[in-house]
Length: 235
Image (cartoon, rainbow, N blue to C red; front, side, top):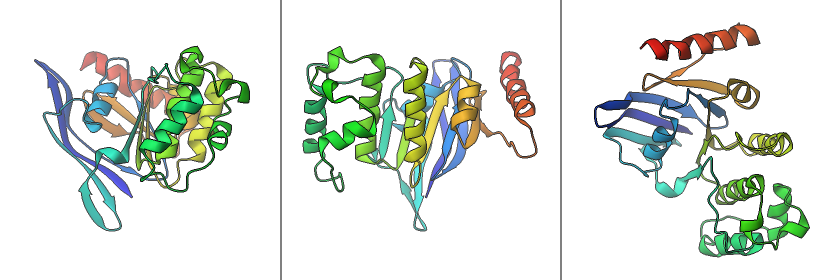
């Protein structure tokens, strides 16, 4: 399975953020979308997710030899700031999500099995979401995307503000679910991208560029990325 972007462009007034962008992402890999703050990573995701309208471009899914437009229900989107219904308990939220999506969620499991997957303690499962920590809310946001099993999973800097233990748990979780789906993980932290991701893609000057890391040691690879990102200051 492949996710193919063709001729994606987006401007805000006279500012051109995405420029005739094209790229192909393959299933089974975590792609690190690396760019400086303000490079357009969130704009890129919002165009794919149809939260904002692109000026031009196509988002295609190639599967079993056929190519078609990606459907909205095939996209999962995890925001950097988790958005959950804070008036519900964790258990009520998961039950509601399962009820609403009962026709599309294959082989649903007991609620506690889902909580176990993201290591939400039993004593926290019946607390209101408003009393959850940022990291716990982030886990819940990730969890519903795991339950929905989207073919394309967009992750917009979801680990940046988490403590080291929760961040490591989330990284292990992402590695465990990457098979059979396309995962794009945006970040401005190079070491995080190198640790988690199978492939590194730079967003610079409004375009995407894969960074080939074969035959490079870790430090040489970092220098290659930094050199490309520094060029944006002079572009």
